[in-house]
View 1: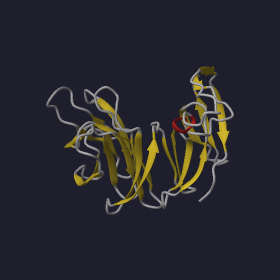
View 2: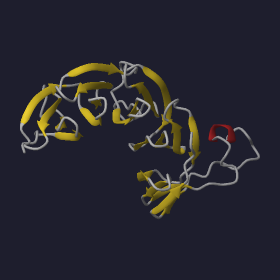
View 3: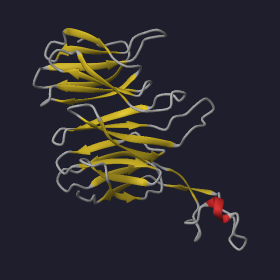
View 4: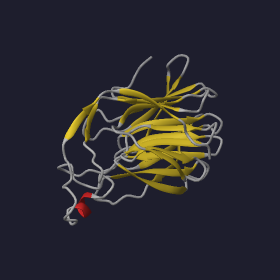
Length: 257
């Protein structure tokens, strides 16, 4: 089987027997493409240009559609999995002077929803807004249904279509959302950002792997914002010391919509 020079992600449509390899440009001026191959033989069937620097792909076999998250221009390319052609391109709203940040994409086929996770935009020097977003799209029309702001989100995006839950994480902790509406159902605070998450299909619980890291020392006044504490004379200054925490595995019960 031939593989493109810079493969990023792969998706499979079992109904059509097609394999979709997402590839980034091999150099300046190169094209970002999705290569459709025969899943049995690896034979190339079609090469389709998509948006700038694709980062992820999700396939809905029942709808014969593949959804490609294009990182650099914040767009979603929707492909027909039988022909390999682009049937629609959905552009997400963002300020034109900021770089694209679309990093993950997932599907709830039962509710016909697409979830696109954007990281915080960063300009040269690392400055910029700390907020990313989870954009919820209608799978049938491509219309944006809702945008949920996330402060410094990670790259984990899990859709549990059996229960209608979406799980992401940001600096507030593990966020569980209703897949149909985008409403936040629960936030579970974490001391460090998780390295990986998965849903136990038997219990419906989230299994979270936390890597070793450093966290800020908390005091009894940590619930008061730092900008406010500095104007209250009887409160001690914010403790900015860090201490190490070991890696761990945590199991969290998730709410149902």
